[in-house]
Image (cartoon, rainbow, N blue to C red; front, top):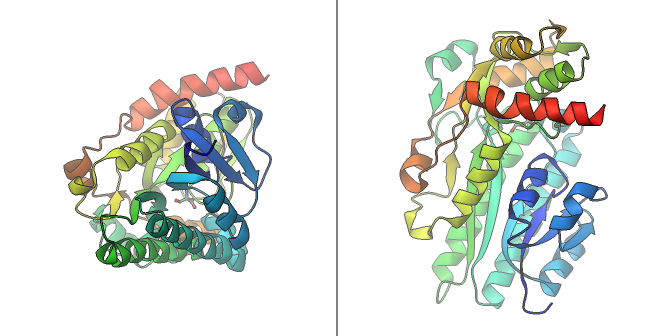
Amino acid sequence: MENDVYSLITGANGEVGHGLVKKIGNSKKIIGLGLTDLDEDLKPFVSVYIKGDITDQKLISEIFTKYKIDTVFHLAAVLSTTGEKVPKLAHDVNVNGTFNLLNMANDQARSQKRVIKLIFPSSIAVYGMPNLETKKQHPKVKEGEFLNPITMYGINKLYCENLGVYFSSHFSQLAIHNHYLDFRCLRFPGLISAETVPSGGTSDYAPEMLHAAAQGKSYSCFVREDSTIHFMAMPDAVDALLLLTNVPKNKLSQNIYNVRGFSASAKQIEEIVKKHFPNADISYRINPERQKIIDSWTEDVDGSKAIDDWGWKAKFDFNKAFEEYLIPAIKIKYTNNS
Ligand code: SER
């Protein structure tokens, strides 16, 4: 309908997409964009689904011309492990795809004289700790610290954060009557969902361990048991996206925010998984490339800016995430599926 206003969700069929689409699909009109057919369970929540590629400039232009979009959730990305295998593809999708969206959303905001919000999930992969000793000494890293990513994915995300700030600040200064692209970004840690298993990431050992145990499958973890990074339960990730989307602009003192979930080692995850699935068969077989990536990511982050500016607080700490969300939901999932 001509007067309808839509949220565009790229990567709608992906991990975060699943959570976000279901959460807002009853109250907002959604245009989903993705490479694969939309999963059946998401169909009731999506008004328009377009099977296509964010690197397709013509397609992005057609979407913005045809529909009035007030918010873009740009979730599509090639994650860190896949990015190391196919760096050119990662760059094309993560950088060129993001540029297309920023550029198009910015043009539309200016020509249609309105604000368009672009919400960009960045990642802890933008950080690069030089060695384990420094990682131990600096567990809670602030947004501006240790920005030395070692993966293609991390480099892409960091550059696109900067691109977003550029589009947002450069053109908002030129804008008359506040018509501009409102770029808002949060840096997610490794996400763990009871519903889906990620693919191509490096923090994937945590969800893989859990989902394997719930299905009675053996799992060989590809990082050392002392490997510690920062994680978040999927419902918190979706809530963080929406809270940041809806906060009045005058509350935001910056464009890019760390959001805290909980810090955990692979061993701690193994222990809590085994507490609930005592027969879980978990071993360790280190993949040196993936280990190097995890060692370069911070143990935790300083999330105080998101707390001060928009009142972010994760509902799930480590214990709650497993005991009150992941384990119960995953038991239901695999019981129903078996
Ligand atoms: N989960 C992502 C990855 O492992 C990091 O943000 O690539």
